[in-house]
Image (cartoon, rainbow, N blue to C red):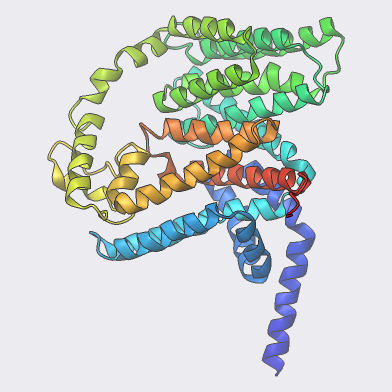
Length: 450
């Protein structure tokens, strides 16, 4: 009897503590996700586990609200567990699959905890903290990797930038639609392009034969341009859209460019073009073309693009990896088991043992989970896309939808689903998206049944 009372009191204490601090824990998680994985685990995993156990009824209700995406994803996990049991390393597959499913619960956790009216706030937090990591990356590049890497590596950061940069489009559109913007679209584009170019030149300083001190001059120039724009326009320095356009977004774009990762480049470029097309902001198309042409004139970027084909066909490169992946898909239609791509070097002497995935979401999912798993994964994406398309006129939905689209486009040539830091961020954005869509749909008039 005493044990039951003690257990009940302990559970009650956990529930009370979690209830009192749930918004603070959510805020800390959104701050840490773009910065360090270890910090993210500290502020996310324990609260997520507590929520799943102590608030199981809320978890169940949130799961039902996310239908039919949640049940399709659960079916994918269940079938993958069965097929992985017959894979190359069953125990490892089952463990990694369960871990993957638990992390995916982040989407439901964010969905349940985020207040209805604060989705735009959390989008902004993700972008601002990502900008802090971006400044570190630009400085690291400017000083020829002499600065210790404190935040995520360039590959992971680029994967996250493919998600956070499109979010800023939704935020800016939100200010525009609510008539709270303090800067015109043309001024925004010019300010953003100028500051991005300044930061890019600073990041590439050693490769362009410039001194590393260029970074300090560049940051000073960016700040001066920002405040000059405020002074000329007689706007308040605390205006959020000015801060985003003048400092945050240029930092994000500059870090994306300086990191030289072509997959995230393609994702961000594609959704930026789509965003302009949807908004009919034709003025931005020439601006985007001009900015792209200017960036192509920088030697590091030009080199990276021109040598894409050569890099694809090098020994052990994507050409060979994808060839082996195609053969494995034919030999193992039910998949080789989740997280078993590390065995691919056994099927080709050209592939080094340290390569553990196929550098492509599509190929990786097909090889590991088979055709059934891939079709279920595709179904999740289609169901999510349908929800976004029905509500795309809302800035939050559009920003999150473009973010996830950019993530998937980048995933054509890289396995960003397997990158824990990128996947957690994607699930966080899914949670924000689910929350916003649920709010919008709850306010729609219900159809009367005759």
